[in-house]
Image (cartoon, rainbow, N blue to C red; front, side):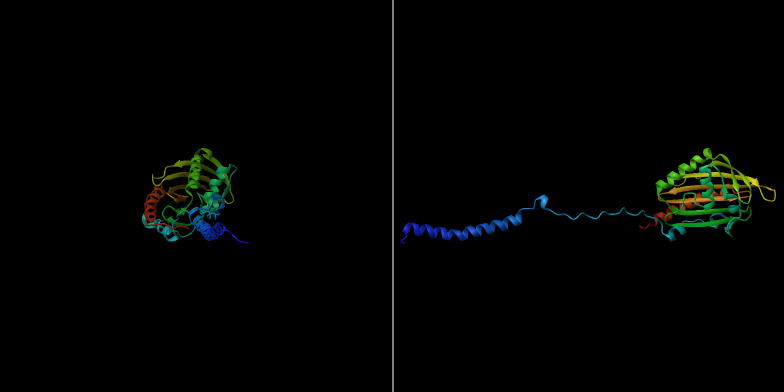
Amino acid sequence: MTRSPARVLLVAILAAGAPLTAAGCANEAILHKVTTAPSPSAVRTTPAAHASPAAAPVLTPAQAQAALITDADLGAPWTPTQGTATWRDTLLKAKTTAPDCQRLLDALYADELLGTPATTQAVTTLDDTDDEAQLRYQVAAFPPADVNRTLDWLRSLPQKCAAFTATTTRSGTQTVTVTEATPPTVGDAREGLHLTLTGTTPEGDQSTLTLDTAAVRIGDDTITVTNGGLGNVPVDAAGQALETGAQRLTEVQRQGRVQI
């Protein structure tokens, strides 16, 4: 079959244009790949792991120990303790029918006025050999919101537990009075109580246990102090311990804390 010159020229032009078209399509594909972002629906993201809340900073055991008071801070006649006071088991281990009053007795007997510390704590106990009194001093970390709720509860006790009776195993029935005590104006929040437990000993003698107890929150840390005895309990001992101890704890806090 004989092709005309015009037809031969058209076929040649089409054949020559085919590579250019293919190359143009390839170049367009490369350009599209480089410059066009994938559609949002095509993007697969890996969800970031949920970070757990940062642990509250707390004192190290060494720092809590350094924040304690010593017998030298209170002066004579205070000395390091020789053992647990006998009145703790004979008088504080008692039962009563009022729930709030029972909670108070249990907290005093267990030496956990603010509850059980979840983290670092340090404790010291001192004896007044002249008046046979004993002072227990604790530095511990608690969530501030929990401490504030407990302080509110303590504040309500002079009304809820102003006077009640408690039954002990060894010392019979005790008449308990609870009044408000005013701790020194230290820390961020504070509350204090003054208690007396009056009854008769197994030997028939009249006895009165006097207790001064207080708690102070300083940031995320707390100080609790309880001073008690069957004789003349020094009225200023708990306040002096709190004033000195608050300054010491504040200074320890400034020195640095750790994350747990």
